[in-house]
Image 1 (cartoon, rainbow, N blue to C red):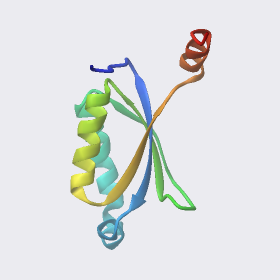
Image 2: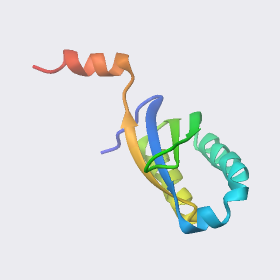
Image 3: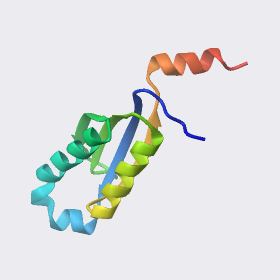
Image 4: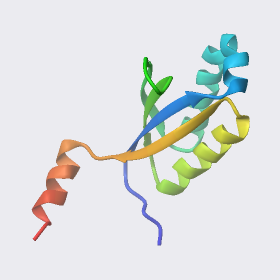
Length: 103
C-alpha cells in the first residue's frame, strides 16, 4: 500500500563515506545536485546543516511520497558520498492529529 502524504517531511542524518571525505572539496557542488534531484522528484530541501558529533550533516526535506524519498535515497547512496539515515518527521499539527486519534 502506498503511503503518500502531501508535504511529508523527512530528516536525513548523513555520515560521509571515505569517498565523500576524499572528495570533500566538491561537497558544495554535490549539495546543489542533491537539491536539484529533490526538486525533480517534486520535493524541496528545507534546511541543511553541517554537524559536530557522530553525523556530518542533517538535511530536512519535504517530499510528495515515501516512494519519491526512496528514489532520492537510493540515487544518493549509489553516488557513494554519504550514508544517510532517513527519518519521517511530523510537524506539531500532524502530531496533534495523531494524538487525537489515540484511544
